[in-house]
Image (spheres, rainbow, N blue to C red):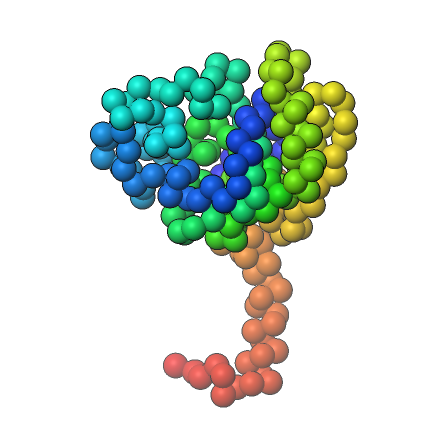
Length: 214
């Protein structure tokens, strides 16, 4: 069982570039000169490799003006992104790296489909809002101060901004329930074992040819 997602409070890092692909989020190689770890959740190198080719120069030094290298956003829990975030290849490590960094919510006007589904499977909440709304959120996030905190309430599906605005968002109910209870796809399915069994009992009698014995 994963860590439940109920209410998230934290700063939001604005990275409003469109079409950021998973190869950029989780590069297979980069200036860190470390062996990429793309298949092991929980690796201590995952957070370091996040956006590595944007965060570090060719010598492996941090690039000061990249948003996640700026002190106010080093502890960001939310990422504000451009359209089609997480497009490209299907590497699940893009979500692992974001989560290892501490980001548990990504807000964008649209997502790559595979990345969007991978978020739910790994305890990260992807929120789709209009591009104009995301831009407004980024404007509130820029003057980061102790009070510039966003609150994401998944139970109520409400985002509260530092200025006190309440913005409703939608999440598929099955996915919302899984995050709230920390359940993966298998655990969600097992919750309906009785219904599945009842369906199979009827199906075996109605379509015996589809359920051969032995």
